Structures are given as structure tokens and as C-alpha cells.
Image (cartoon, rainbow, N blue to C red; front, top):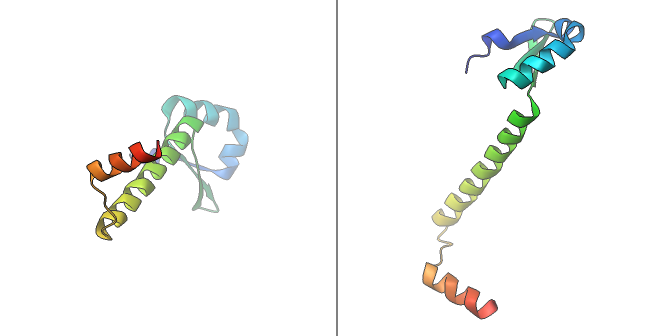
Length: 88
């Protein structure tokens, strides 16, 4: 994804907020906001933000699982099912 076409100044955002919001929802691409010529913020539509949050949560779970494997914190499926049957 190239952001070069999705860069706007803060003054442009102020003057065209409604139009930019429609574009965000339609395109589902992030919008980079600049201030004094420097990128300062990124705006996302809500669906893209939700997807980003879900992706980050899944990556955290995978990282945790990898760490547990590396630390030998494994249990066989048979043992896990046996423990579940005793508790359940």
C-alpha cells in the first residue's frame, strides 16, 4: 500500500473534513495528516481500525504461544483432554 496519494495537510483536513471522511470509508485506506510539512497523524476508517486491532491481538497471541513453546511450556493433547475431563 502506497501512502503517497493519501497525504493531506491539517489545513486541508479542516477545510474538507466531510469529503475526506467519505473517502476514508469508501477507500478504506489510511490518510496521513501533515503539520508544518511533517507527517503527524494517521486517520483510519472504523472498519480498518477494528481489523488492525484484531490483527494486533492475534499477533500477540501467536507471540505468546511461540514464547511458551520455546520455554517448554507444552502439554500433550492427551494430557490436556484428560485434565479437562477431570475438571469438567
